[in-house]
Length: 126
Image (cartoon, rainbow, N blue to C red):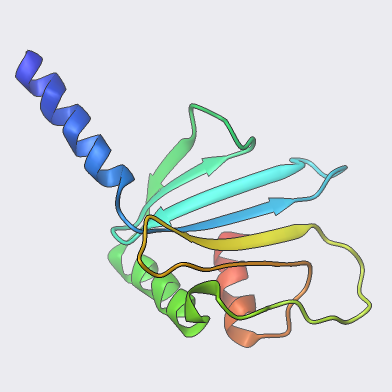
């Protein structure tokens, strides 16, 4: 029994070290006011409504869907390129894309983007 618990814990620790795409949206006054989603390369996703939430909702995306999302992140240069349009549009919440546990380091924050790949990726997470 101890071996099973150890193997399960080791498997979870390895999964936590997989490269992941992080998405968050902070929009005070909306419901929910905060959302964050992480997605690893294998399609494992976690959804939280608070930054330190310890019991996230989890789901598994298909390999095809995960591959499409990761391809969009790559087209966006792993979030090293600005996405903010700079247009005078309504504030719809601050969105963040970030690479985690990855040699590809990047983070971008924006309210509104006209970048087609950025919009497609946002649609996946919204």
